[in-house]
Amino acid sequence: MGRSNLQKCPECFRYSLAPICPDCGATMRAASPLKFSPEDRQGERRRQRKGVGSGSWSSSLPSIEKTGGEEE
Image (cartoon, rainbow, N blue to C red; front, side):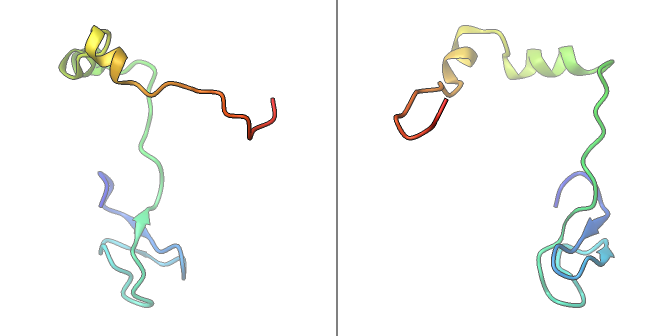
């Protein structure tokens, strides 16, 4: 379960706080996306904790490689 307590069933569209739908038994999903704010007060602290900007962090990111199967 995510950070939001309210869950929505993707099968029967019922809302609940449970991780499993009480009607159909499907796995519940978050009802709405988490809020985003460009004025994130904790953003700088979170980036420091994750080491964003360091050499090891940037080398751990996936690279985009061209494969012959996609059109441009």
